[in-house]
Figure 1 (cartoon, rainbow, N blue to C red):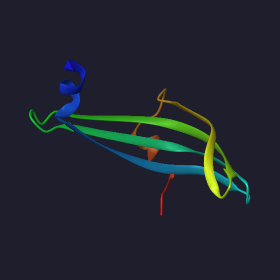
Figure 2 (tube, helix red, strand yellow; figure 1 turned 90 degrees about the vertical axis):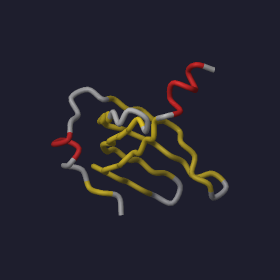
Figure 3 (tube, one colour; figure 1 turned 135 degrees about the horizontal axis):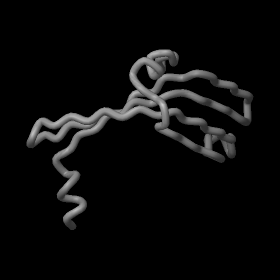
Figure 4 (cartoon, rainbow, N blue to C red; figure 1 turned 45 degrees about the vertical axis):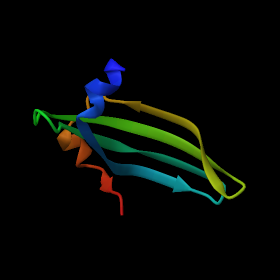
Length: 88
């Protein structure tokens, strides 16, 4: 598949920074920023992207399940990303 071959040379990472986290025994709500970094292992080309996420989770049978997830990259950059709290 040409699409698979197109992306096979790329390696990617994601970094998360939290803004707000509210957790109860059965539910959780979280907002924050993410940063994706990709590099083409053949050409050396690098790409970086940023966005804001919101996620709502519910615990069912002791397993966290995502009820809602949204993200947007509008207006997010390195300076805004750095205002979030690093994942520990």
